[in-house]
Length: 179
Image 1 (tube, rainbow, N blue to C red):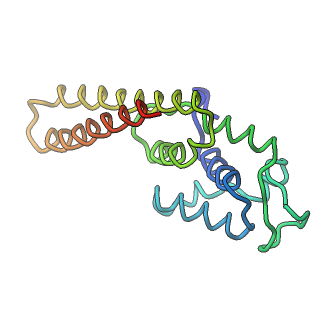
Image 2: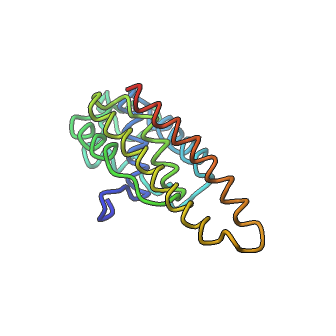
């Protein structure tokens, strides 16, 4: 993790893999494809993020072959107790300040696997998501005020982004309150 207890790109991929296997045992090829599909649909194609390996999860004891078979495409994997602990650590990590592509992936992963946490942990994570949105709104509002008198279209663009964030903020608050 980064020093602020937020996920690195590699850890986001680990979260994706462990969450998928925690939901149901998966064959090696299906797991690799599921990770690739989810990440590339959220971020777009990204070779730097796709570097995490299913083999490494097995080596670290986070997943295991159900039938004791190795890494063949037809081997089915399940999460271990150690893997569940790692999944929980990754899923409860903080969210980095700023609207980055990595944050977009982390948000999507939290929503995809939030149900794997207990209710108190779910509510705490929802609070973090609301807080991240609030911080982003403050940042963009400040930028908008600073450039209010500038020529050009920056303030129009910022108004659009701020509007989207305000809608997201209301949705996140409603989601949190429903947990």
